[in-house]
Length: 139
Image (cartoon, rainbow, N blue to C red):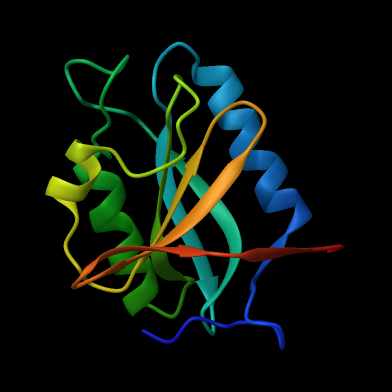
């Protein structure tokens, strides 16, 4: 999967997408929120919040499997592409946790890790997570 970058190498993110991510984290606190990053041409256009079905949502996340199936079906039918995933870390540490690293597939997808006030974006590579700088777009 090719990710769209600006000239200076930043991942372009719509302001409203970033705001939605932070709102999700605030609304789920003290539990972890989670969901899908959707877009086209490697550019995130929107998020799709999902249920956190993990039995310990205060410290872990698991995206509702039906939401993943639905996103893949929609993409195959011409809808937005599943570019990656997001979840919150209520503790505020926006780096991939040991659990995040263990669950990563190394498939090149994006991961956003957020808290109530900040977001960091990561690419899940075969060699581990790679931090992505980003640029907020007005739209």
